Length: 181
Ligand SMILES: [Zn+2]
Picture 1 (spheres, helix red, strand yellow):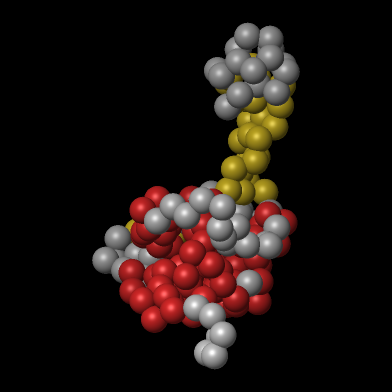
Picture 2 (picture 1 turned 135 degrees about the horizontal axis):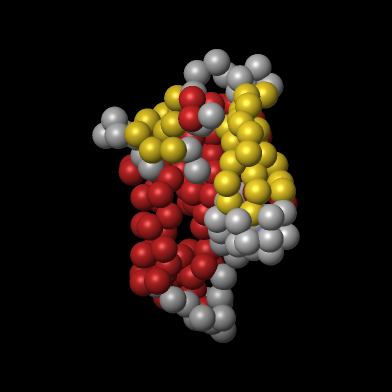
C-alpha cells in the first residue's frame, strides 16, 4: 500500500478491524520508511461483483471495460465522457443494489444497449448490431476497432462513408444532368 506521505510501498499493519457491519476492513498502517501512519479501507472479497461470462467463466467486475465498450460505440458521436460515466454509474449501482454479487455478461450488454439508446441512436445501432452477434462487451470493442481500422475515410464522418459506400453501385448516375438538359 503506497504511503500517502512519501510514496514508499512497504508498511506494517498496526491494527485491522471490520466496519460497516463486516462489509469492509479498516487497517491502520505505518510506513516503513517515514513512519507516517494512515488508514486504508478494503472491501471484503464477497462484496466484489463477479461477471459470469457466456462460456460460464468468471471474472471480477470491471467498470472500465464497460466504459471502453461504450466509448468505442460513441466514437465521433456527440456524447460526452460525463454522460458515459453517469450511464456506467447507473449500471454499476443497479448491480450493487441487488442481493446477489453475480452479474451475467448478457445483463451488462443489455443494460449498455438500453443506455446507448437513450444517449445516441447511431451508437446504439453500432453497439446493438455487433453485440447481439458476439454477446460480449470486450469482443465488441475488439471487433469495432478492427473494422474502423480497415475502412479509413479521411475527411468524412464514418456514417457518411458507410452510407456512401452502400449507395455507390446504384447511386452512380445520380449526378447526371436533369432529363432534357
Ligand atoms: Zn512514508
